[in-house]
Image 1 (cartoon, rainbow, N blue to C red):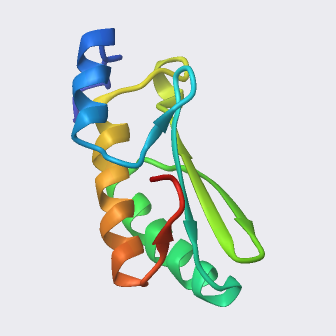
Image 2: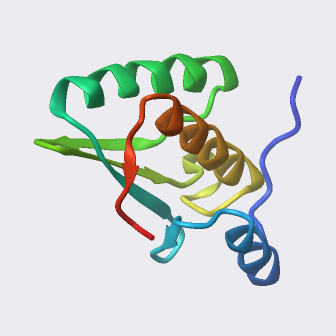
Length: 106
């Protein structure tokens, strides 16, 4: 059985954000928005969802015309940031690049 997630300290969050360029913090959530055509955004979301299912960690996803936004926090620890959030952020960045999505939060 996997270890339960542990909330990061403030210093750990600051350090993790330095390694996740483009991701913004809003309280205990990190988010990033990508510009992508609508149907490309749908394909990107399916790709992200497949990875999320495998790692058992999920982002909140907001698909709009021409953009998709991902917001991540760990619900299992009271909506706090954990290493799993930053791992998922890196995975989303790689998927976005594969789908040629344009980062809008730079």
